[in-house]
Image 1 (cartoon, rainbow, N blue to C red):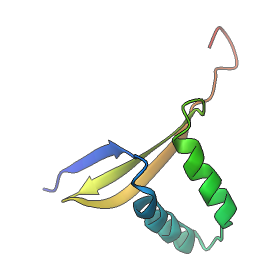
Image 2: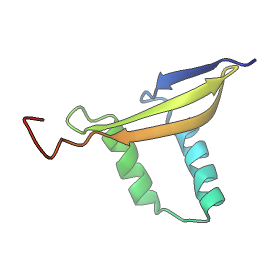
Image 3: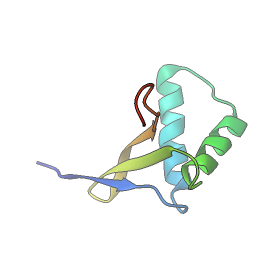
Image 4: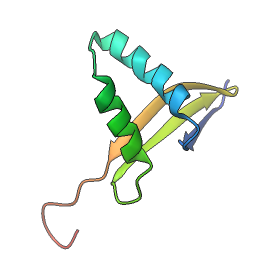
Length: 78
């Protein structure tokens, strides 16, 4: 059984993320403008942005990606 390592992206991972992102777009038959892609990438590394991204790595090869956005709670103190 292969083990999967989940690692947070870093500033050097743009080409890896872009390759997976382009595969995602082909699969869903969408064309996300380059400006949106670059803006999203920039937001991942901005400390004030509540956006995060990680890669799934199998045998040293990135095979998946995930990104998330932290949303505040609608109620309470959060």
